[in-house]
Image 1 (cartoon, rainbow, N blue to C red):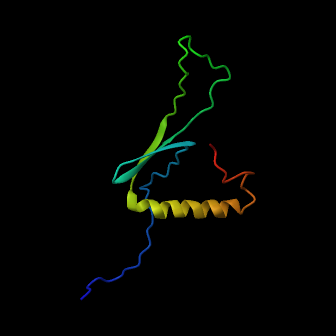
Image 2: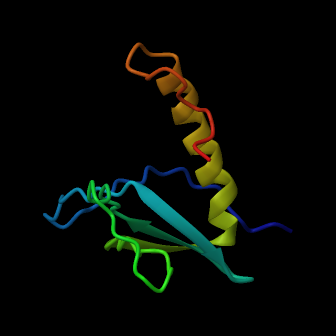
Image 3: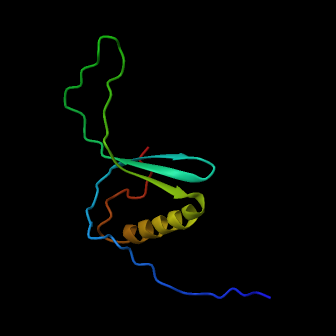
Length: 105
């Protein structure tokens, strides 16, 4: 006999009064067998004049980490589907820039 009962509910984020928005324009992704870690950084444009060291080593552009999220693997399919749906809806608006949705690299 199944004693499980279905309960419907609404999830409402509770920001605890901290509704600060963080800007990031770069993300790296790593994973373990248990979760994915998304590291969001803010990359500023390099200076107009970039000097290549005499050693020939490429210059380094530092990108401060703005947020690091570890999410369980089971969360990802729903997360990816939600991102795709929002991208589709945004692409249908006049606000979408030309080429929106095309790969950046």
